[in-house]
Image 1 (spheres, rainbow, N blue to C red):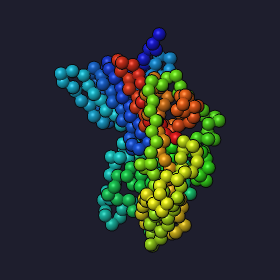
Image 2: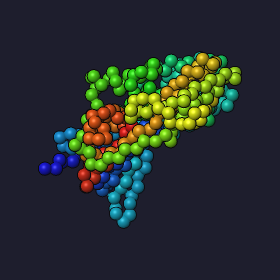
Image 3: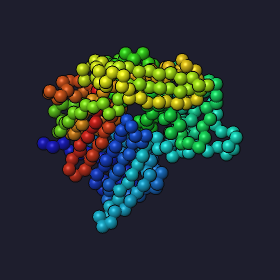
Image 4: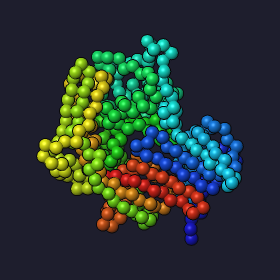
Amino acid sequence: MSRKLFAATSVGNKIRGIRSITINESHSSPVTIATIDCVDEDLTIGDLVTIYMGYQDNNAQIFKGYLKQKELKIPEGHYSLTFQDYMSRAVDFFIASDNPNNPFRRRNIKAEDLVKDVFALAGLTNFSYDPTGFTLAINVDAEVNLISVYDYCKSIADIVTWTLWADENGVIHFKNRKPFIMTGNSGQPGDDFDEREEAYNPPIVINNAIITAEKLKNETNLRNKVVVYGDNESSATASSSTSYDPDTKSNVTVLPAGYYKTTVIASNLIGGASLCQKTANYNLHKLNRLSVEMGLLIEGNPQIHARQVVRIDLPNVSNNRNWYVYNVEHSFGSGGYTTRLMVRL
């Protein structure tokens, strides 16, 4: 017997006759987007809405965010509503000082405190973070002007290789969340998300719910050399002749000897050669690896979000192995409920 679908929102009959729901989350996207197709609605742009989805016997809050757009479709005669999560407030908040000679400034500040203070400009104060060990703007002011809150904070996240996102409850996270399975052996603060947490927060197991699967391995995004330019002409480099293969959990030779795919990080917020070297090392650890990913279409599961770890048991492809959820799309409608994933090792 097929399971009975369930969908509801926090605004009750202000959204009537839900026909379909689509929710897209991604490690690489600043905002999570939800779309509801319905027969009728009585909402105002900017309304805060929570979406619950799943089955009568297994449903969960899956999204919380603001109505950004509503569209009446003709001749169908139904409505399409588009929502974005809390991070949209950071994306849309453009910092422009009333006095160009007196912009928002900070000096000699921890990276996480700088990010926290800038998010507060957009009214986003529900903040959770991993300490970075980076103190920025040691010799110069960090001046924040003529840039969005999100873009500025993302530039800080790129220096320290942390990740920014808003969860389904509206909490802003600034965490050491790499876009792959973390093993706890990098020596970086916060590198215990996957290994140590598993004992009390077991990953969701995906096995017989799999509809289709495909696996991909490439070196497209691999970078085996990082060059960093800091303040006062300070600089550093980090490189390696081998790269990490997460499939085999070993370092392998991918590129020819003496051949480097290089990325550059330049910021006067990075003070001195020591911090430049730390920045280079952190970025090399993140970037110098093959990409091993798998696309999955599974029976809908409202518990799965981007930036989670799931365990996949699929013979000859993934024998009871943990994967990181990089992208997830939940699709709910008359045809049923499915979840499409892109996961990485």
